[in-house]
Each structure stands twice: as C-alpha cells, then as structure tokens.
Length: 369
Image (tube, rainbow, N blue to C red; front, side):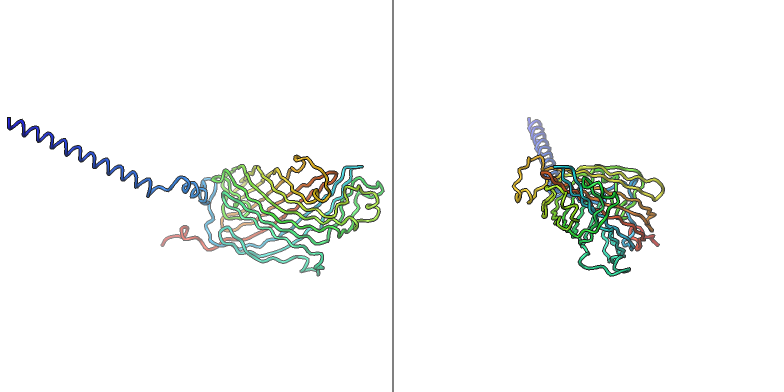
C-alpha cells in the first residue's frame, strides 16, 4: 500500500514537472515569437517604404554600378523650340514660329548621380547679343533606378522667326521667313515618373552615366506632370498682308493655362556592342488644360474638349567603359492647347553632347594590400 502511494505521488510529481516545463517552453516560445514580430521585424508599411527607397536593388547581370565617387564632364547643349498657332474657320490657317537654336558649353563636376557646373552662351563668345532678345532656360533632370524628376523653366526672348505659313495668300513663297518679335513665352513645370522594371532597366546608364547597362532590357513607365503656360501673342506685330487675311479666331493676345497630365509609356535600353548603349523612351500623356482664356471670352466648351494628348521623348546613345564615357542625349516635350477655333502647339527640346571621366574609386572596389 505504501509503495503504491509513493508510486502515485512520484507519477503526480513527474506529470506536474512535465506540465510546468511544457508551460515554460510555450511561454518562452510565445515571448520569442512576440519579440521577433515586435522588435526584430518592422511593420509591413516600413518594409515597403524601405524596399521602395532602396535605389541600389538591381540585378547585377543587367546593371553594374559605378565604381567611382566623382566625375568630370564637358558638355554642349542645344535648345530647340517651336510654336504653331492654328485656326480652322472660316478657312484652315496656320502660323509657325521658332527661334534660332540656343547653344551653350559647360564644365560639370559630378558626385554619384548629381552634376553641378557652369556653362556659357556660345553667342556671348563670338558676338554680343542684345539682352532684350535673350531668354532664360533652366532644365534639371534627376535619374535614379526607380524614380525620375524633371524640373524646367523657360522664359523666351523675342528673337523668333516666322518659318511656315498655311492657308494665306498663294503668292507667299514656301521658304518665306521673317523676324517676329510678337511672341513671349513663360513655362514652368515638374515631371515625376516611376520605372517598373527597375532591377533590370537603368535610366541613369543612358542619361547620367552613374551605372552601366550590360544586357538589353525594357520597362513600362508611369508618371504625373503639372506645368503652367503663359503665351503672349501680339498678332499686330505680324506683316500687314497676314493681319488682313487671318481668321478672327487667331487674334488672341494672351493665353494662360495650367496643364496637368497622367502619363504611361515604354522605354528600352539596347546594348548594341560592348560598353555601348542606345536608349529610346516615349511617354504619351492624357492632359487636362484649365485655361483663363475661356473665362475671358465666355466661350462655351464641352468637358472633353479640355483633354489633349501630350508627349515626352527621351533618346540617348552612350559609350561608357566605367572609367571614360562619351555620348549624346535628347529630351523633348510637346504640349497642345485647343479651344473653339483656336489651337496652340508647343514643343521644345534639349540636345546634349558630352564627354568625361570618372575618378576616385570607392572603398569597396579598392584592392586590399
């Protein structure tokens, strides 16, 4: 009897110890699990932001990083621009204007993907230019693996030329051209865009030389843009024979509108030889125009008439062996504005030719002694 009691007590004691050990193990696992979720693992939102902001997350089979800290680059810029004013009634007419190309040369110092420098107008070197005819141009493009930003401001001078006429007198020769000081333009805006296939496609390889594209790759691009436009069109400065026959709808002196668009396009990087890259990108945009002109003229307009199609084009060819680079690139923008019996088409672009070299190897690429 006593042995049985002792045996029962031993079994109860053993089960109690086992239960306590299991309870302790469960509590330890639970605390470890809680600690791992609350302490070591960030929230899904923070993880998504961290992944989104990681601009070095790319496939090294397609993209190789820049091994240097700094760069020095000499460059030449040419700026192009045109404006077309059109009216359809009582007869189709079109007047096109453009200034002479604007050229600058400069020297730039780069750190990673940022270039800062100094440039001078070529016209100031060879001849003195009337300050009244000068314009102001500012274009800043920042390229990263995932995101891109364009900031631009343009204020033109009055050095335009009439270079195309349609719908006027047949006696006007096809090569008719004449100076026209009746256009003044002010444009400022911002473009933001996202690159979807950012692990294999590199915009910086084509436009900022901060990476190297090793294999062909393409990507879809989506973005948003907003810009403000002010066109002062003094038609009384036109030759008399044009004023006498131009449509009444073209006689609009002051045009102000805000352009907001959503864009979606495609870009492709073609590695056509070792260290040689060609890039082409076209991004159409559905744009909404809010204008002050309609409010002044009290002309009715259907809601769908405020939507137009704009375009953004990027193209570049570059040779980059990691140390030295040389290439050319073009960025062009097109805007359209339409109202009753009057429309304006505006396009401007920048052609760049550059050459430079990288220096000062980063620590991770230096040979260890």
